[in-house]
Length: 210
Image 1: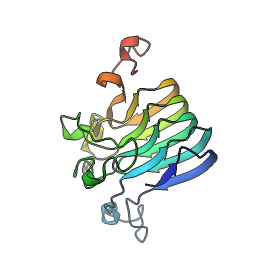
Image 2: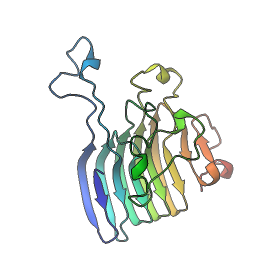
Image 3: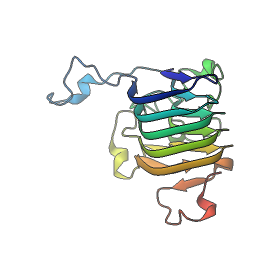
């Protein structure tokens, strides 16, 4: 896990980058003829987990390349996330989440098991999960999936992964300005309700995750 804000904690955080490496810094990403020679596969299970019952403010942060999720609030209260950014692991869905950490699921509260998935594109890291939480505000989030097993043909039709944000069992949640890349569903909620990137009726209740 890259950062854990526990139930008894409270804090103000700004300008941090929780990162699992996707490339070797000894190689240049920009000047090599073939930039793929710098790509590496490093496996980290979890990104930022917030369980705090007291206020937490996070401004200008990023969490990238962990297998289960990049940000998650679990039974948390009074959390503000301002200008967050995520990237899914470049190698997914090979292997699919939560591999290779199958045996470690439920070691931490709120671990997703991806048991509701029917295809590989669904078994990829969540960018943001808000689970059984209350009074959560998100002001601007960029949730990005740029690759499918290191390939980028999926960007042509924005299908690098099926879903990236989940809100479930929560109340008083306000989310403003969501930006996604390479994702089919903008948001997933109770009973797998969803907001598709193709939806033109975002003001309709039937499109709102609960």
